[in-house]
Length: 285
Image 1 (tube, helix red, strand yellow):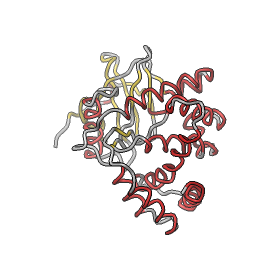
Image 2 (cartoon, rainbow, N blue to C red):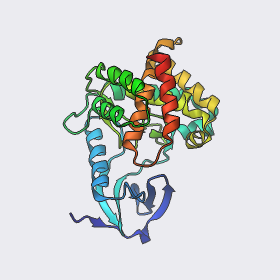
Image 3 (cartoon, helix red, strand yellow):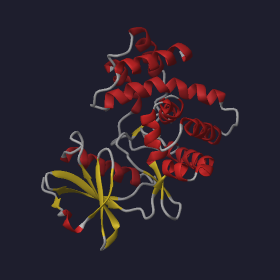
Image 4 (cartoon, helix red, strand yellow):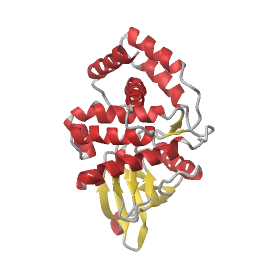
């Protein structure tokens, strides 16, 4: 398929992330160009899927920047999309204005409830439960006793059809200069129980936060990430005592580790994953 070709000579680089670079153009202030550079994402099918995913999410009434079309930039593929003026992620706001951490956690909870109350287009998006079940079987780094317990837990999960972001965290919710929130990075969007998203956030804040690399990604200290979880859990569960909510979230944490390994083709520290999974299974199953 032939796509529109873009010459970068009239564009200015605006940012760079793990997947690629973003560009803007002076004569089109509302337009953003994203160009993929990462090998496993730099192909026509991957970019086309990202465009279609964003368009389906927007069609379901969820706030996300509009995505327009797939384009070619040299030997790379990219997309054009809506440029959100003055955008900042909740992670960046928490880092720049620590006093607003509780406010951002509450906003994340409110948008999470909106997301998790939205019926998903099950004809386009995959079942997170099915993906989890496949991931458990494919996770060669976990012991058979742990696998058996996770398999039984996943099998018993309800077949819910509400939206699941897949990478639900403060870096993937941005706000405009006017304060309007938008979900971004929708690669892992699916449907299922909201606890898939909640378990993911729990893991990031309470386990991965001990690692400097993770703290650098979120621009927060371990103490801040733990405080973020506390404020989020209070707002999302509606109770200052969220012990039961935490326990339920923790039961989904090992599922999230399996799913990460299943989705990400890059090498992982499997022995560490196995230890973390075993500690959760031993404590909660």
